[in-house]
Length: 92
Image (tube, rainbow, N blue to C red; front, side):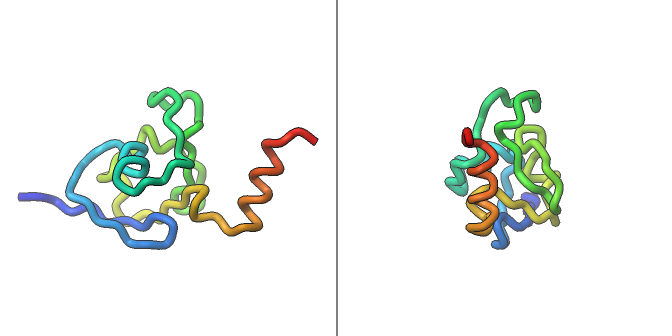
């Protein structure tokens, strides 16, 4: 029997029956390229997303652990928040 994993990504409900690494699911299945694959071990934080408002590393989560959660990637941020993040990573 297949189990469905349901969670929100950038405000939209998503459903999958694949239990897989959330980083891979976001990139491969949803095409969200702001989530980067740096080390796949949780050390580098290039895959950081917001899960229920808290920063988490997507490479250490799975679709099963994401059930019922609200996930936000850079693509789901407001324009104001995108500009703030872009400013934070540029030289002044």
